[in-house]
Every structure is written in C-alpha cells, then in structure tokens.
Image (cartoon, rainbow, N blue to C red; front, side, top):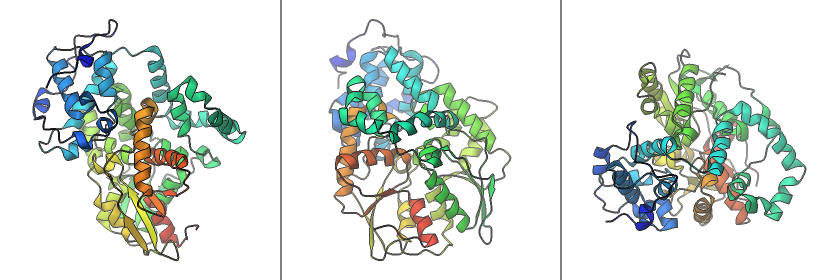
Length: 450
C-alpha cells in the first residue's frame, strides 16, 4: 500500500527531517503490524473520516515512513496523528497484538516537540493545558462562568450560534460546559474518613480535576460507598492532576511533573490501594511506570504507585460488597452501561462494572449496539476535533437511546459531558449517573426520582 499523495505534500514552514532521537515510535513495534485491516471497522476516526491515513494501519505507515526519512513530519502527516482519538479500540481488536497505544503516544510526544503548530492552535492548546490540569486555577475561571450561566448569557450565545462562527473549537468547549453550582467551589473532604463498622482496607482516593469541580457528588458518593464497605479513606490535600490530559496530547514535561506530584502526595500514606473513579485518569495512573521510566529518582516509585492503582469498580468487584443494597425504584429499573474507552480498552475492565451494578436489586442491564465504539470525548478531542467528535457523539447517543433504558450509567466525566450534550440535541432528558452514585443511593435506601 502506498502513502497517499495528500500525505506526501510538503508545507514550507513545517517540513522537518523526521522524529528526534528521544523515544521515536519503535521500529520493532511498527513491524508487528501485518496490515491486515482488522482495525479499520473498529476505528472511530476511520469510520467518520473514511481515509486510510486516519486509521491505525495508515498512521503506522506514516510513522514508519517518517522513521525511515521517506516523508517529513509536517502539516499533512500531523493532521492524521491529530485525528486519532486514542481510544485504543484497535489494541483490543488487533489479532497480531500491535501495541498501537505505545506507538501513538510516542508519536504525539514527537509532534509536540518538533512540529510548529499555527499560532491559534498553540494558543488554544495553551489555554487547555494551562487551566484544566490545575483545579485551583480552574476554579477561579468558574466565577465568571457562573455569572455567564446565571445571567442568561449562555442561552443568548447558544441561541445566536455566534461563538461557533467565531471559533468552532471555543463553541465546542462551551457546548460541554456543565452546570456550575456552589459545590464546584468547595473542597470539603477531610484527610481521613473512617470506615463504617470493621475496617477491611485502607485506601487512598484521587479526586481528579474535572471530577472534583463539576462532578463533586460522584466523589462524595464514592467515599460513602467505600466507607460503607469497610474502607478507611485517605485523601491527601497535596494531590493534583493525574496527568492524563497532557500525557494523551504529548505534553511530556508537564505530564512528568504532575505524575511526580501525585506520587509524592501518597508517599507516606501507607494505603493498600489507590482508588480512582474516572476511567481516563485511571489508565494514565497505571502508566506512571512508563511515563517516568527515564527518571532515575522516580522510576521505581512510579512502578510501585501504578501497581496500587485500582478503578473503584474493579476494586469493589474484587473485594466484594458487604453493605446491604436496596432497590432504586419501586419497579424494575432498566440501565444501559456506557463503556468508557480507557476503562474498556485501556484497562480491560468491562465485566466488573456490570457485576457490581447487577447486585443492586431490581436492576436490569441492557447492552447497546457498538458498545466498544468511542463517544467522541476522548479527553480533549471533542474540543480539538469537534466535527468528528460530534458525529461520534450522535451515533453513541442514538445507540444508547435505542436500548430503551431508563438511565445511563457512565464512569467517566468526559463521556458524561459528551453524552449529555448530544442528548440535548435529541431533545431527550434521560438521566446519566456514575455507578458509584447508584450504589450510594442503593446503600442509603434513596429512591430515584421518577
């Protein structure tokens, strides 16, 4: 197969010799791809865009060609790497065991070091990576956004469509903005929360960035579920971002710095496991050994930390629930569980969430069509590539609605924001809740509103 002419064209200001010597995509990993094409049907970007170079197989061709100096790292090649959602569905599907996750990660770090993006692209990315991974700074930005929502400006902006005309990316960012409440401005967890009854485990808990500001009830529910099931919960105040957003977009030094901070924050807590309730964060936390592999001071600490990380659903399925569970409604409740890509494909966690949810009396689980296909959120992808993300979001929501479920269970804040956005475009108000919220309600005997 030949590289497309579109990918061979050059851009005078952005042509480079190729990747630098700092961990380029490994030729040995590239050579494991036998170009069979099994990945194509399961690649969301290929399904939407329809071009070979926007598939895992096509991107591997590009990586190989750049490695060998046949084509440059330029605008034409970079746009195909940027179109990848990083959902890792191809890793699950590949019969040859190609480690595409390692290849695209290495490539993205190369791109961010060596490809000169346009000024506007740089500024937009700078906004994302200067604000989103820092909850204290992000909270300051929430003040004007609270007024924006509560003074009616949001309705006006959305009604006019003006922002989309000015910048589709800014419009995409605004379109997933959740409701800002007084809880977004609070950090009210103590450092230590005792277990209810006999203590079974001492667990650390990571609050997340988006999760702690926009989905604080999820964190509160998670703590209650853990303590009700015999866990003493430790929440270090010094913890920050898990590094998922910068790591997924090739921001090497920022990702390393945030990973070191996270490791240090749990250094002397003596916890049995470190719990995370957001899928994208969990995948990155488990990759700390890889992220800090070149850091002589932290490489062993990173491996030890990563070995302790457990998704909360993975943990509860493993240790078992001890708290008594009550029905959530007076009649049977039909749920559809939304598989987050970095939980399903990245962490290989699929059965455990379903096992936990089925323990709630009166719950019936439905399975959607294309359950393994990305919803289009993919970290910040829906802000950087809004058109592709929107099409995937529409497909995902339609498939979820077709199950006839009464409620959607979603274990990742990015997925929840993306699905909520597209439910509105379908004029549907089906609720979305984190599995920990459902468990918390069940344990406390709280009934869902009809």
